[in-house]
Every structure is written in C-alpha cells, then in structure tokens.
Length: 321
Length: 246
Ligand SMILES: Cc1cc2nc3c(=O)[nH]c(=O)nc-3n(C[C@H](O)[C@H](O)[C@H](O)COP(=O)(O)OP(=O)(O)OC[C@H]3O[C@@H](n4cnc5c(N)ncnc54)[C@H](O)[C@@H]3O)c2cc1C
Image 1 (cartoon, rainbow over the protein chains, first blue to last red):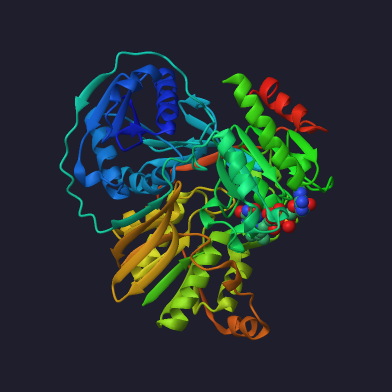
Image 2 (cartoon, chains in turn red, purple; image 1 turned 45 degrees about the horizontal axis):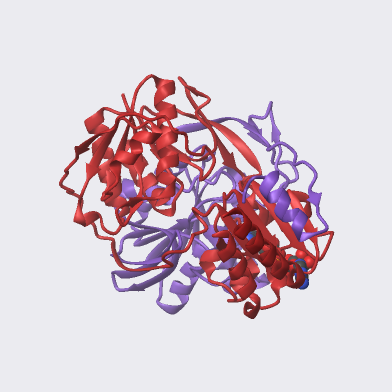
C-alpha cells in the first residue's frame, strides 16, 4: 500500500517542485506506516530523491513522453500505482500536473483534491486541508474513494530532508493509449525563473504608466533572481504578456516574497497572491487596499523607490556574497 | 458544430466569504451569484464560433433552481438552449459525471468548461468529463481554432505557451485569453427578452460517485499590521533579518 509520487523533470533535471512533492509523499507514507515510491520520467538524477525520503524510484525513459503529454503521464502513473499496489498519488500544482490530474482521477475512479496546504489531518478517514474561494477560505475535505489523488500547493509544505537509500528500478511500459493531442510548438522563456516556481516574484501594475517603464521592474527582478508578473489591466493593455497576469483569472503565486509595485490590491488580484509568504507593497496612495494585505510597505513614488531599491540590493548582494 | 458550454454558478468575486451550520456550509446570505469568470470566456468563444463559423450553443449547469438566473444570463448572452441537472453540485467528480450524461445524449462536438471555478477551485470537471467520454482534452486553453474536425489549441504552461494539434470531439478547460476581456458580452435588453423564450430544460441526476466531501471550512487568520517603512535601507534590512527572504 505504498504512496506514489509523480516527480516532474525538465531536460533530465528535477523541477524544484519534485523535491517538495517527494517530501510530502514521504510524510503521507509515514502517517500511513508505509513507504513512498516516485515515478520519474526521463530524468537523469533519480538518486537525489532519496534525500527526501523516497525509498524506490520507478525510472521511466520513454521518447514518446517528450514533451509532456497529459494522457500518457496519466497512463504511466496509473500503471505504476497498479504495480505497487498503492492507494495514494501525490502530485504538484504545476500546469502539467493540473492537466494530468483529472484524467488520472477519471481513470482510477479516484477522488482528487488540489491546492492542499498541509499534511493530512488524518488518513482514516482521509482528511486534508486545502484552499477554497480563491484563497479566501480553507476547506477540510474528506476523500471517500479507495484511491486518492493529492495535489500539493507550491511552497505550502516545503522540502524536508529525511535521507533514505533509494533503490532505482527501470519501469518500462508500452503506452497503449493513442495520443491524439500532440504538442507542435513550445514557446517558453528559458533560463529565467517562472512565476510558478520562483522564490521571489516582482510584480507591477497600472501605476507604472506604460510598458516602456518595465525596464526597472526587470532590473529589480534580475538582482533578486525573481520572476516578473503584473496585474490584469497591464496584460489586458498589452503592456506585458498574458502569462504574467497574476490573480483570480490569472496565475496563482505562492512565492516566499512578492513585491507589488503600483498595484492597488483589488480583491481579484489578492486572490492570486495570498499564498505568498511575505508581501511588500510600493504605492504612492496610502489608501491603496494592498497596504492592508501586505507585510511591509513603502508609501512612495515607484519611479523613485524602485531605482533606489535596485541600487541598495546590489550593494547588499555585494556585501553578502 | 454543436457546442456545450458548462457553466458554474459562483459567488461574485467581491463577495464576503462566510460559513454557517458550524462552519460546514457556505453562507449564501447576501451573496450575488454570477457565471464563473473562466466559463464566461468559454461562452464568449462559443458565441464567436456561432457567429463566424456556424454552431449551435447549449449551456449546462448542475444545480438546484437557484442557479436559473445565471443560466438565463447565459441565454441572454446568446446561447440557444440551457440544460440544468437538478442536483446540488457537491464535488467535481459528481458534476463531471452528470455533464458526461448530457454530452453523451446531446452529441456535442465541442465542450467548453472553465479551467477552474472560483468557489471551490477544483479544476477537474472538464478533464474528468473528457476522460469519462474518451474525448480529447486541452486544459488552460488560451487559443482555440477549429477547421472541420481539426483543432489547433494553445495552452498556458508554466513559463510560456504550448501549441497543440488535436481533433473534435474535444473538451476544453478555458480561461482568459480564449477571448479578450473587451469581447465579453453584457446582455442587452433584446437578449434578456429573448432569453425568456428560450428552452431551459431540467433533467434529473444520474447515480454517480461522490468522491470527496468538504466536511468543514474556515478562514485564514486575520493578518497582522503592515510595517510601513520610510527608507529603502530599512526595507532591505527587514527583508534580510526579519522576514529572511533575501
Ligand atoms: C471577474 C474579475 C476578475 C478579475 N481578475 C483579476 C486578476 O486575476 N488579477 C488582477 O490583477 N486583477 C483582476 N481583476 C481586476 C481588478 O479588479 C483590478 O482592476 C486590477 O487588479 C487593478 O490593477 P492595478 O492595481 O494594476 O491598477 P489600478 O487599479 O489602476 O491601480 C494602480 C495603482 O498604482 C498606484 N500608482 C499610480 N502611480 C504610481 C506611482 N508613480 N508609484 C507608485 N504607485 C502608483 C495607484 O495608487 C494605484 O493603487 C478582475 C476583475 C474582475 C471583475
């Protein structure tokens, strides 16, 4: 009755979320008195999972799975589950994982709970805490099916090192499903942090006045190794790409640090950022609602504060490197 | 082409969230319900297909009679017919099973739902539905072009976009990007009058698996006071020494 965890990788290397879901799966396994087995697809560094308490890695090398295909991934994970006699599957909150999850759920007739923010409250019955109402509430959800799929929110559980000797087994399967949905092009920024897995996100709103002023936002992000984001009107106006729009109708952000510059903090925007740990707001209007939702704030003009912040952070980096 | 748009009836974004019955139920008191924003983008894209390429557009909702104003709004926007499954939408798996029945009986080529609803944020109904019916599925869809049975779709991925080629019959989990914000339609008087005449049928639910149950709710702890700082130096110091994020 082991726990299966789907660990995601890219170009042969684990994504950051792989170690978080591995840590989470180890904790679930501990609570259930069993072990955690990872399903790893086209990754070259499987032994690393032992650090996070994984005792077995099912190593899948399959050209058909490059790039990610949701249906194929669901098929591999369900076959691994069968092979291991497992009853719990742990996945991340990446867009790929969220694409695969419902397909897996239907296939296994399994209850799927996304947006989980803590270890299970109990495993008999299986009860789990997750966010609901766009982060304005939490639901404590009981999963009633024999097989359970747990989608862990980014950065909610963190990584926990519990070194284990991980055995690595090749898991070769022939994919019998016919994959009618095929990837023809991937347009992705490489080498830069993405909103989904960045530790720090620097975000700006309509207060920046125009796209020509984003240079300083990018500079600030560069100093911090951060991803850039924006409010909805900014992407609606075409100042920034849609993929950067954060909030209820955009992307969720669960970073350690979220810096909001010239963003008012409308409820729809806050819905997407409330899982971030530390929020900083820079706004010239002391009445901006964001000041009620943030941890630190500067009331001031972004065009003065941001350049100064970049300089001070550069100095700080130089002193602390 | 026959299109079904799955509509979730959700509390308006600005609603205050409260719970009743010992925190076991969402408090609907004073809450305004609307078409789920992600579904509205899908509905508008469906209307585009209807106008530009010719299509019949139906909408379906799982819910009790209280969801009918939201369905009438979808009809006023231009959908041809509405179907309500007379059941409380308790969990995503159950809802998907009910909608699957409608799709099976209705012979739809394209089913559009939202990436997620903004109440329970499950993000599973379109995918489960696709899988139950063995239809193709594209999630977080931000662009959808259809030529005969051939489909080109773009989905949002972490850090970018992926173009997919697939075919009808297809289920889409849609979101902003499917149409521009400015294309969203506000029902006009004529639309509202016409919606009254349109067919809104009610069907009884089929037996289904209830996979999950929300047994209790709570709210995040109130936030502590913000620390307002005067200087950038102070901010850098707090981020390093207190918050420990840099
Ligand atoms: C159904 C629905 C869904 C929505 N979903 C989202 C969503 O997902 N994400 C989202 O962001 N919004 C969303 N919105 C829109 C949201 O309600 C707000 O309109 C939006 O977040 C405002 O963006 P903003 O703060 O950039 O712009 P504004 O509201 O224009 O605010 C700009 C801010 O910049 C400040 N400012 C101006 N000049 C300066 C300066 N020189 N220095 C410093 N500060 C300055 C101003 O004081 C102001 O606070 C949604 C709305 C609806 C109805």
